[in-house]
Image 1 (spheres, helix red, strand yellow):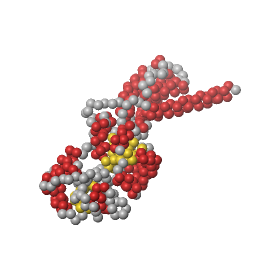
Image 2: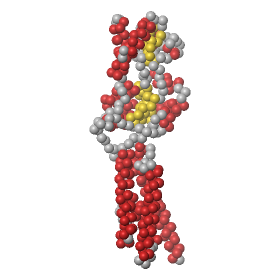
Image 3: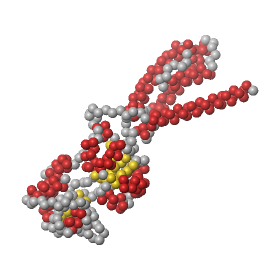
Image 4: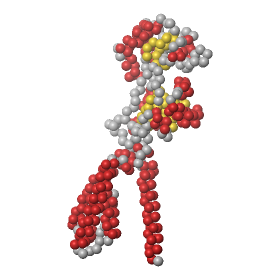
Length: 381
């Protein structure tokens, strides 16, 4: 992008660009001399940097700054985990108040049915057993779960049958709403990772773009969360913790992984390789702010003021904005109207809470069976 700014400068000030390549932006060797691009500027081998460099205080003694040009955003990108992996989706379709009302309704129906059947039996001189009352309570649970009638209809009076019909009609609406919500929740991504604290504490792997300033920042940082990420998630990986954008973005695509790098490079790769449905769960978090980019000129150079004037003019008339929109890839949006619909199959992770509940139920049944057996054995003695 800075080359586009420099070509406009050349036209504005009527000079010719004679480009020199450098493999590095330039960092202090520790003895006052610099490598790379800043080193060439220090030795006055070039008049100014046609590539933008970070505004750093240690470089101000080497060259003069012009104006801030672009923001090189370095953010961590990752895909939000499925909602089913962080929550029990079987409790999410209804808010707590609805669950409370549902329990109250079930209790009212159970009491009503038992009372109506008891009245009917009393009027006909039939004794009502406790087991039949318990079967009626089971009927209410069966109706809510769409399991049908388990109690013989011959025991029902007309008022009891009306109550049963009302119960099953109410259960249809509840079950339909619940099932529809479950389907949506199975396909939904969570929003559990939003900050650097979440990245540090969640079980997500982490890698960083292999650039010099990332090495320096992770060694110089005093942020406790970033230190935790470095020592617990990056250091065990060794050299693999610092990798190229292509590898990092591919890991984000296929793993529960976060990649910290220049967002323009990452979004360009995502736009070219990812499918539409894969972009919907993509999120980003700014790990740290880096300084603005700028063009450096030789210390006490006469180019400084005239460059600043013309670069400010480029911004005022919209040339800088045009360059940004044309050359800087934007965040990929999840298009709801793209026509691409993808349903994920249900895995063991999604049904795990149901299996746990089933296991507890089976264990409780066996315990009650053993208790009844022991009780019956003792009573027969």
